[in-house]
Image 1 (cartoon, rainbow over the protein chains, first blue to last red):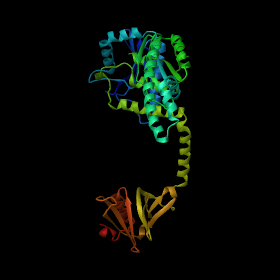
Image 2: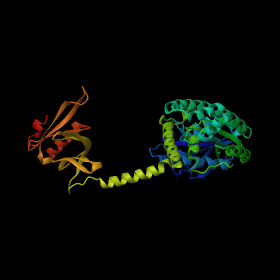
Image 3: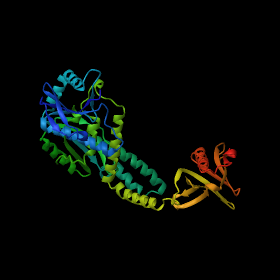
Image 4: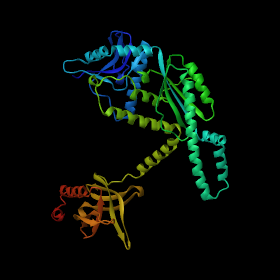
Length: 254
Length: 198
């Protein structure tokens, strides 16, 4: 058993075609049709692609993405798979058979997903704020904190230190409250212009840029304009930045 | 505001998707490797780290500077060998130096070549200690009390043909001793040293 299939995505349609040598390590990518679905694969050894060299890994991941993109463009709707999904054969069973067996068994589920994702694309939305700018604003706005920050100036060194700690704690609490408030407002604002929304984990903070929210959004391909306008409004707010990426194949919605 | 997918800027977003997401297949027909998610994480950490740091310019200056320094440093500090001399072993260690009331262990790298044993301090481009292999009379390892109470430290005693005693210490002291002895044997210099070497 030295044959296996590297699976990129399941595409809509049952054409049996080749997409050329666009795969990982220039492998030839082609489709294995089952009913009205096509598995986009290349032939490989039954072992994972792994490398200690990040540049090599990066190249492979990029190649994976390129194939999914090409299939997406070619077939309209795809269910993408993650990197390094390799279908193996077994004693007396070819990998293609295994693959078809799975497509058959999961057929209903797969076609339902396909219908939900038809003509849709995924977009990444991340909103950041600059804690410095926001803090200034919070200090201005809260009489208690403002009073405290005024008082510090007239205190002796030791006392000022105690006051500063108190101030920082208060400010932290206030910032958390604000973050919560903004999250809710932005969530509603963004949700109203997309089909589906998924809340992702926020990433580690950078000093001058804290990630307030991280969403994956599903919407009609080519209908990102309204979302873009809404995000621009957020981006215009002082101290806020928006990252808007896509269109991605619907990785987060399969 | 328009969405972006510019390859460089969105690499992390891409990795987030390709490495963690996508359709799940039941495990019995796919090749499963426990190591894969890990590779993904490492890759992402490495790439994200670099990307972020470069974006904010944190690394760039520092990185360039330290690289330049390092490469300059390396260039300068290559140990110069005599013609025909070959390094057989390099090991981190130290040499006990004493002069009058001043005494200390001087750290550096021991180099064992086919001609000599030396301790080289790269940062100072200095050979702290060296001895021709022909001058080595005997070697012995002894356990001694360390500065810290209760701890033992192994010291390699090297006695030269002038009956001078040198004290050496190394990361793998047995290995260093064996390597020197072996060298002496192959060079036919070992007449009696293996007899008293313990």
